[in-house]
Image 1: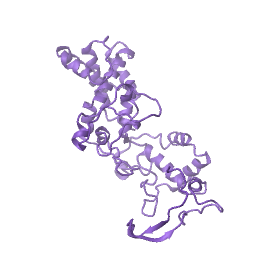
Image 2: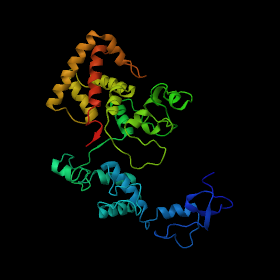
Image 3: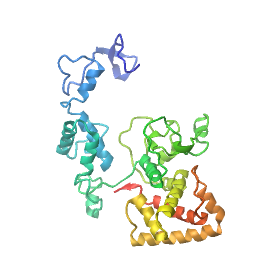
Image 4: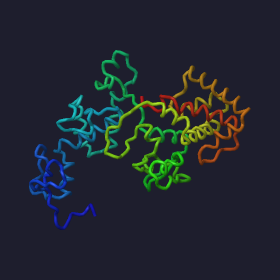
Length: 356
């Protein structure tokens, strides 16, 4: 019904001091006078407004969109206040760049994929994120773009990346929301309503985009990684680093199950030696081989965990029982648990959850 025009238009008024019960002057349908006007003869309906919004002569729409794209890759928009392009917003750090990106976006026919490619293939984006300490002190937010971006991944991407590396991620597009793992009792304790009933099967491994969201009790894992609560519209999320995030990655069933499935891939696909298998886990999660010092630390961890689980089989089985997916029982439980511990350690590395 909201997509239909009303047969008889409802009168609109300026609300005095914003109070809904204090109407002021009556107003008609129009666009802000400070922007380009509607085309002559255009009807004053929503279709005409939609066409005006994406008209190439509109100076605002394309700039807002490409600025959000830029924030997605660099952590901060060319206009830092991505939620406010008005007089109270911040001036763009690179106005000419914003203008060029906006006009190029319109020229390409609003081709979103092409714009992503333009940004990620630019020399600016492909710079190393390493920087001298004096440069970091002078420009901590990298507004001068003198180095590549380095920022903690969004909450949704942290989870999806772990599922992808483990082979659990279901890449099906579309469909209703799903209810993946959450702590028991969280809905009933916080809201007094019926408790959370999680899904089974492939629904547990859908992309985080499809996670069911209850505003009075949002997914705690998402909130730990600074996802917006959705109580209000947020286009610029904060990014923090807290102990809760480390505890989440080390103990949440999602990541323990992902670590086990990565361990199975290590043993199945990564060669026959522990060194090769650890290198394969690095390739799955970091897209590179471990450096010598990193490999030595992980090998020591693997041997320590293997000794422990060989004498504590119950602990190994408890670790391997996390999650609904079936364990590959052709692998020795103690060895698999040791590799799962290594995989869990890798998933906790700063480099895994940080784009750099």
